[in-house]
Image (cartoon, rainbow, N blue to C red):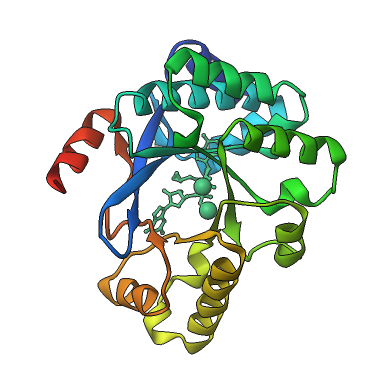
Length: 250
Ligand code: G
Ligand code: G
Ligand code: MN
Ligand code: NA
């Protein structure tokens, strides 16, 4: 397939790059970190969405090279940011299957000099679906390095709550489907309220994804949600624009 050939070429020839979307503390309004999101400016097709090529990467096994590359680039970039700013990187469940994820993360930290506490790894509930002891061992080993673990897209899986008992996450990211039109939707408000109280009880940071409007933001503040991310604050931007985003708030 052409997309597979092109993707392989992009991975080998620096055709993929991370863009960074800010995570904002809803109390202070300050940027606490950035989520790295892979971008592929295709020479013929323009920007191709990761929603299209991540599944191709997963089907073809290219996800390991892609994921390793993103981890490495994100750690290298973040090592140049202020010391109180973190970077979050998405992991595909398949990256846990090859068995060398721990050394990929360790190498990225060592080569970049980024302290482990400044790296956050985002995983989705599907990873915990299988209840694999190998996956849990890797999660614990990563956390023992000092890396922070986030549960991404919370609330969209089959039994989100049971996964919270199987592993001590540092952060829960509320899926954007619960944030959409929050101000007009009483049910969504009740759901967000209970996730926030769950987070307080577990001592876990709660981040709302997909914040697009001021009305959604004031609702999230009223519910005591800790952190937000979304187009209201900023879209994902190239690393060259990260420093100016940080400077603008100082
Ligand atoms: O960046 P958004 O623009 O379109 O991303 C679409 C989807 O691709 C999201 O589910 C996001 O988590 C995923 N994604 C973005 N970057 C990466 C990455 O580096 N690795 C993995 N595994 N998924 C990513
Ligand atoms: O699965 P994950 O949460 O990692 O994916 C993040 C995805 O959400 C990316 O595709 C990113 O571009 C997208 N995104 C980020 N902020 C917003 C937003 O405010 N609204 C919408 N609709 N999508 C967003
Ligand atoms: Mn994510
Ligand atoms: Na998400």
